[in-house]
Length: 252
Image (cartoon, rainbow, N blue to C red; front, side, top):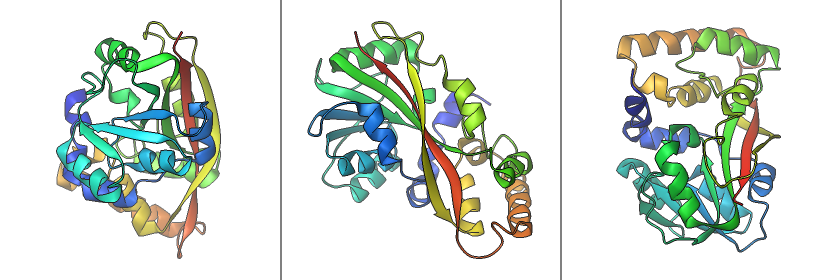
């Protein structure tokens, strides 16, 4: 299964992504930015606007760039006040030194950093911040760790739990020139779910979207059965224990 197939899988599920994916913890976004309200921030690989919405909430000036037309349509529908442009991390449609921060929500791992790194450096003002944010499940909680085992790597992948995220992202910004050493931090978060809506959330993962229909239904069936067997998730709404993890570096 190629990286290109995975990264291009989301458009077919853009409406479900917009409905079921979580937003980002505001404290995480504030730490990632480390800039004052009113600063210019690029949401790169913006998807349906989950991170853009949180950026608006903390009071910064947002421009969003997204390569997938279906995802971009959902973003524009949800956030008509945000300037949203077609483009990619490897070809950013902005002038040199035009933003104070570049943030990527659950997207940095899809970038070709050999190409995207110089592009991000080009559009980022000196001293500006580059940060990736990921919403991760808190696998220190027993039932979440059990869910990970039941679901398999297609539904809960290599950056989707706290312990895996820490390892997978630690050196992600190392190859990017002209940036100081990166920092990691994690901030409490959560998403209100039911068993059905959590299944729907997991179905928007890239590994699930590219899976043959019978295999996907088998995985989702195991997840439904597991959630129905646990007192934490069997009845009504519950809070999915999460954190927003941040990887941050500053341009020299």
